[in-house]
Length: 335
Image 1: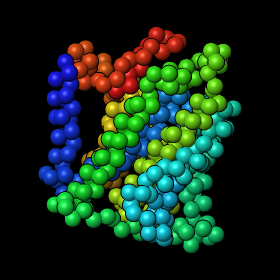
Image 2: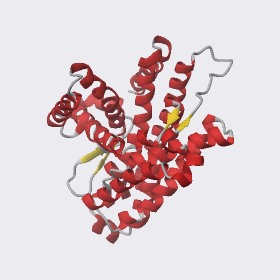
Image 3: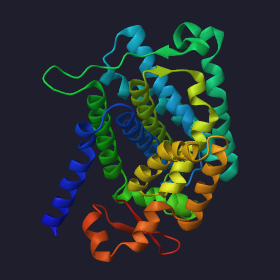
Image 4: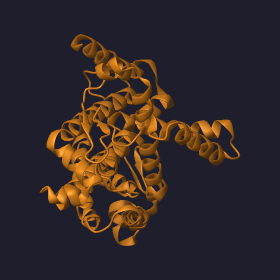
């Protein structure tokens, strides 16, 4: 069993690395952007999928991370890799502050508060008082890093592998965090807040920490996206970005780490596919595909795979374990 699992992991790693040597140009850029979206959706999944706090404002945390990274690179000369934790830290601080309303608000009320943040942040970035830092409506141009001299890679290939490595690290950290007592506490707060409080779980701490960690991961994705796209501007972080991340979470499957990958693929490729099918009305095609995906896979791609894959294959490919939910006896897979 261990040999099969190791072989599957090695095959998966080779499959992910191969595009750096087989693709170039726009196609490789698309895959790099998909990896960035996967990290952003991973952050959203922690607060919505595992803790049950609906957020429609994670595009704001993405913007904070992107602008933090861009400002540090262009105005302070920071190396590109050092801006990733800085962008995550800045977004985490804002997320921690936003987490406090989450203590009193739930459901659509919390969603509206976070959506208001997504609407406000692009306007703040355009403010004249901050124009010397943010570049106003013109934004900031970022210079993409060159690969190290000892690596015979193109700039696009290096950016893809660098993004892939950062994404893999964050997914591994999230997997380790979403285990044991921490995972059970988050699920208990999500499903039975009163029962969790009666059991001695500090609900305020769980919710605010989940929001901070979630925002921090999405902020890292934003800083990474600034490096990949090489440009940040307020219009790039409109409220539609938050909606797109939420769509990716739902389509991929909430409370499932691999679901973030499937959701990122949907967010990255389906709009382009819709425009290819019908350039005059791509929104219609996108809407049809979205409704079809939700109708055929109401629990997302991850849920559909869990139902259809044979039990032995699920066991051998899933590094995590199923944890019983306190209320319905269902299972949640940390895989």
